[in-house]
Picture 1 (cartoon, protein in one colour):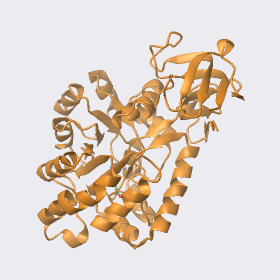
Picture 2 (picture 1 turned 45 degrees about the horizontal axis):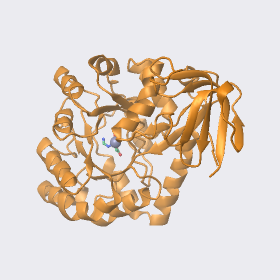
Picture 3 (picture 1 turned 90 degrees about the vertical axis):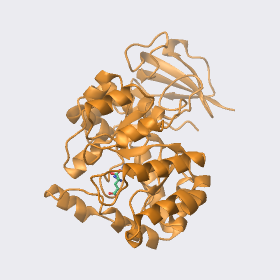
Length: 389
Ligand SMILES: N=CN[C@@H](CCC(=O)O)C(=O)O
Ligand SMILES: [Zn+2]
């Protein structure tokens, strides 16, 4: 096994406020170094005390942080909905209807086409600082198409999510209950071997998505099959998503655009992370969620891109940080925590999103001396993955 010392780190974000040298909520260490072996981080401390290693990377005073965790994406798809984006910028509201357009294009694509589109999207998000990524199905909506989406996604990540309950596909609209039967039966059985998570679009404000009862049935079936629940909720208006997520012990409820005081209190008393997706508000011309109210109540929040062809076709975590700071009431420190350790919690992982002994060496360096440059240099590609081997 070979070891690498990364040194010359002007600012190191550890997200470990308990480290003896760390300060603030980001667990910041100035003039830091770390030792990394092939699999994990082996030592973190001041540059002057770094042990010897086989190889040396000197980042010359730049800022190093854990790679972002993008805990909510829909990256397996074919087709293009840029015209829909243009219509929304002109005032057409989003209701989930465009999902069927992507379903048709995705069903028509071959495995190789989907794999190569996904590989390109993964390259794109890595260049923007993302390490671990969660990927959902949900544009197949037939047994075979959902299964192949997850099979292809699983070639790229361990965080795969079965989203047969995204919308009711066009051919099933005459009998919505029969579609729920399919999702909870044959489709779940075919998909569970390729998925870690189950998700549902629980949204009474969309004619295409699922009611509270249907969503509960879908999530409970997934749980019974060994999958862990997460929920798309409270995106288009107030609704039952948060309540259902907390009731079922979901790791995360995502969107949280429209929350009541009762929703915030429920989240505060639970272990469910509120995942905010401000790129969606940007791309759908919607109001931004009030992240400050969640933080004040003690709720753990995550930030993710929701990268998908309909509501946010961006894989840029730095953009989500900038939007969270500019529009959602977070400090830069809170936004970076949400994009790293908060998002890691939303996929129930402790080995990512932090820099500590035993963590995975998913690290990025900024072309900047300070993390403050992340939202400050909005739109500028300042993130670079650190290649250990
Ligand atoms: N809201 C549901 N699903 C996606 C949008 C998918 C689409 O419009 O294609 C989301 O998270 O925003
Ligand atoms: Zn989504």
